[in-house]
Amino acid sequence: MLVGKISAAAFGSRRAGLAALMRLVAAALLALAAAATAHAENVVGCQKPPAKHAVDTRWPINIGVLAPQLVAYRCSDYIKDVAAALAGAHDWIERRAPQVDKPAIVFDIDETSLSNWAEIYHNHFVFAASGPCNLAAAHRLCGDRAWELSARADALAPTRAFYRLAGTLRAKDGHRIAIFFVTGRVNDPALRDATARNLRKVGYGSWKKLILRPRSSRGAVSIYKSGERKKIERRYTIIANIGDQYSDLIGDSDGDHAERCFKLPNPFYFIPPGLPEAGLKCLAH
Image (cartoon, rainbow, N blue to C red; front, top):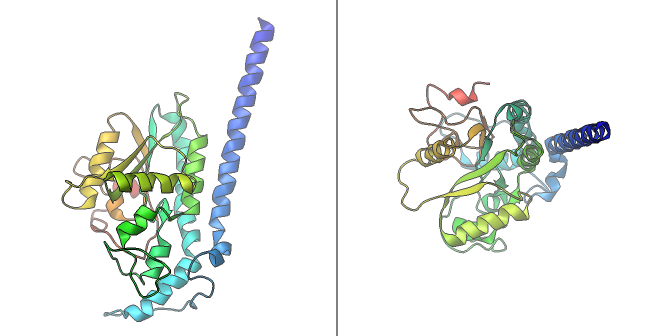
């Protein structure tokens, strides 16, 4: 019996050591993502980016002046700022997950988990809902649906590193954190398949559920998203909600439907509504 106890203890020790090693590796990946600006030359438009300079923000702002500075930001500080926004989430889930029986993390997709920069840059910040997408056709807009169906979006490296870290953690009951992707993309079979394929292709290997917006959904996207988080809360504790728009994070009269939320930078487009005057309780950390 003593031998059995020693073996079990040794096994438990090895298992704990392996889990700790996996967390260290994930933390190292997150740190590397913070330094990803060194890889800006691999991003479209960043081979010879515009020089950074101050923008005259007096109304009206000249789009011809602003747009090059958005490119300069994407090629310099953007990835670093995304990593900085996720640093607090990293520390939080490491502390919180072991305290909860059924923890969950909710991720937005566009400009949170996946980067659509190739489409954004090609379109010069213009949104084209429909039409073909040929990035080689310099003077033709890339249609958003065609782009999403092509499953060519890259991973946002800091978010992927954070996702991988979450995969190394265990809940109070020993189970993994449940991962949910909640996106404003339209829920049809072709787009669902393309979105899942794109996520897997760039390193988001598994999840509990991928939720796309039903065609019947009406009103602000925040209403749909908070409603989906409310459904998740029936079985799980959402310890973190990650998004690039306040509309990804806003709750309803019952609350924000996440213990904590983390807002990633996105100066490239805006999906209303914005931050409520009263703020968000889940952001107060």
